[in-house]
Image (cartoon, rainbow, N blue to C red; front, top):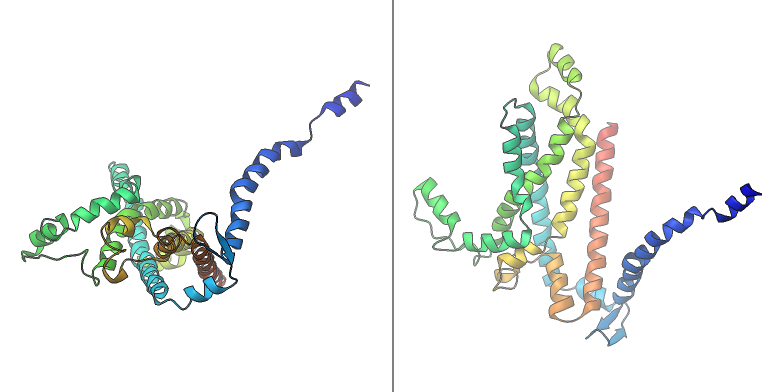
Length: 298
């Protein structure tokens, strides 16, 4: 009798899932469905909506400004992967082999820019890149001895290099931590065995270290790509008095979304841009995973 009574009072474990399910529906499922429907509507204000079908997508895919934003974002992503990540890996390898007691200090020093928000970084570098009195020009002058007066933020050919340099300073340490954690888990006995067999440092890195850290490297590459395609705060705050740089030289896809959704007050157009961006990121990520899996099998 007591056992039956106890069973009747035992709560169903599914009850404990309701808070999670409720939060997911309110903050994920409903916004996702609403964003999908908005992509097929024209909105002039939060209340007025008109169903227009695929016109938002057709306009975006024929807008030259969108392709300028896509090109800028792709260039930034390219340098994030092929310039930023090798530097992060190199720094991680230097810290991994170092036996110095100050290794923790240098690790914190390199990672510390990540502790500063990108909004503050954009504002800070907008001052540092000032034409006449900026720290960047002064630093280059001291190194080269040349009297430089480069206007970084008003030259459309220098806007993207400026963004790449800022991102390099901001994110190298963040990715370095991932690589350092992966390097510390590499089996040292395999490296010692390869060295005994006569393998050089490059052969050990290529045949032992690189395969061991490949899962983490794949993760870092994918996350860096996603982060690059979501770039917004840096150019938005780096060019405060311009429309994402001269001649849209610093305009990204998310910046284009911001202009359409909030400056032009067309949330439907912004939702369509968001879905196009989601599709682009998904395709690139799948390609990267596929390439990584093929390389691992070979």
